[in-house]
Image (tube, rainbow, N blue to C red; front, top):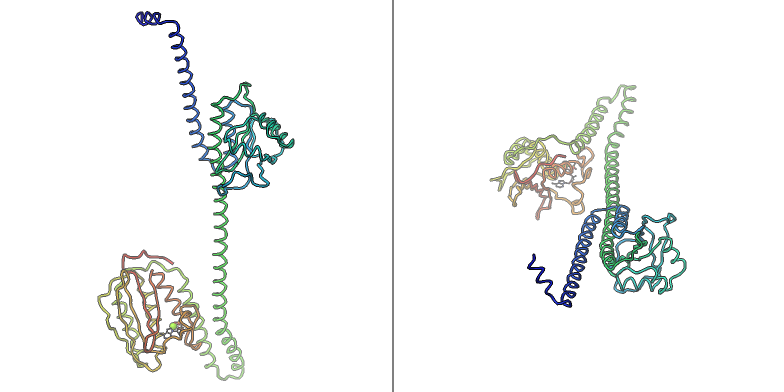
Length: 458
Ligand SMILES: Nc1ncnc2c1ncn2[C@@H]1O[C@H](COP(=O)(O)OP(=O)(O)O)[C@@H](O)[C@H]1O
Ligand SMILES: [Mg+2]
């Protein structure tokens, strides 16, 4: 220590002064650097915080409180350009009818209405070109602002005007009152405010984008819901109309025959034949209602691993006799090595019977029905090919629709194929039809292999 003091005291006077100056300069620089680091850190913290706020009001309040606290000013205000995100402006020209709206104030005596502020072109250009805070006094004197706009800035007690710029557009202005200490704003303050304003503009824009996106999504969801509802109602209306139509016919017949029965009973004639007609029609109603219920009633969990070969052979065994009586022989050709599928034995048997009965109806002169099998990737297919009348081209798009039938009222309800379609789709499979090159039609059912499909419940 003594040695050090001795060596210092031995320095010439001029050198000593320069040395002390250097030390003091370095200390100042160090202080400035520490303040800068502190400012930047604060801005970083604020940005993270602000970007997590989704409500605009909360965001603006947060911005103003931060400025007031950091700068030690009495109050602050924010004016923003209305509207949301816009494309980047190529020119720095002020858009016609450009205006800002007072969005939030803090710590001001002004408690009046939220007004619009229209900066003149000179102020607009100055802010866009300088991109840093402007002293209010300079702006008022140098920029020839209109009295109305000056009085608005006065009501906000503006001492400093901080532009908020994004994508080459002036998105808003932040105004700050004088410092409570009446001290001047320092270069550091201006730098801090410029960086902060940038961050805030991004946060405000993000929050607006978020809100407008949320609004658009809500609108879209509402429209979609409406669309689905109206489609559902249309489908339901169509279905109800066809059910009413289908049930109306047998009901009309029943009504007429009940009338006849009444007359017959009075004369004691023909009663038996009327009753059997009524029975037929009641059966018809009950078959329509039964098939509809089958179609729309949720099925219990009756899915199991199925051997399609067994299912087809058993079904053919049951119905082959009435077929043979009509001169129709069911053959199994190319029908082997079938893979197991997951499904309902009862439902799939109903599909097979529906298809086979339709084939029989189309083969007035008898003939062969051929059942074959094939594997396509993860699907096991069964094809049922008849040599009947085939399906007219114009009927092809309609045969799976409920109540589409070309048969006499007493022979068809038009529900067999639509029920079958529902069952196969519910199994995660597909049912298709095509006319054969020569005669007749071929129906193909494809079902996903066991373990390749997750069971669906209707
Ligand atoms: N194998 C087939 N050959 C010719 N036409 C068929 C065949 N299968 C179905 N169709 C046609 O599809 C219509 C609808 O069949 P479906 O839904 O089973 O009702 P339905 O048998 O009660 O008429 C039949 O009326 C018929 O016109
Ligand atoms: Mg049928």
